[in-house]
Amino acid sequence: QVQLVESGGGLVQAGDSLRLSCAASGRTVSSLVMGWFRQAPGKEREFVARLDWGGFIDYADSARGRFTISRDNAKNTVCLQMNSLKPEDTAVYYCAAKSDSGGYGSRSEARWYDSWGQGTQVTVSP
Image 1: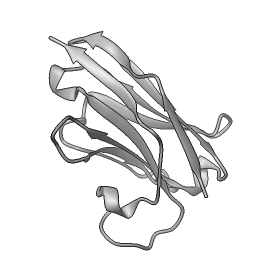
Image 2: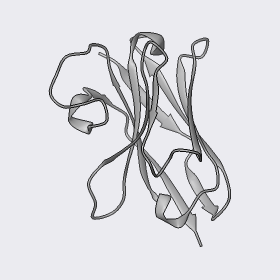
Image 3: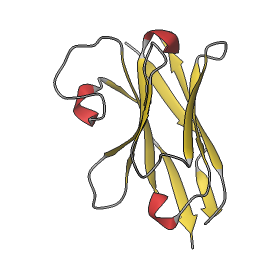
């Protein structure tokens, strides 16, 4: 099993940047598909970005051009650099992982992943 711990959330103003980190244990991040999701109050958990074991990267339209997902194999972490933050980015951000390519759904769906962190709160004030 993979254990995931997120960090780096906080309260910032619109236009600021934040860098979220997801530390993994139990498996190396290079052997996992790693995803970032977020969930705002009253809304469903939504896809933000993913980084496949082969290096393929995908972003949600809302994140593309502002967010960057990256992997640090030496630290066994995956990061999400978020720039030009907007109030609508306010949510709890979750790190997710899966070690195989099987399962239901696509890699941009929460149900495809089988390991989750506890989440970190990001609040962007106007």
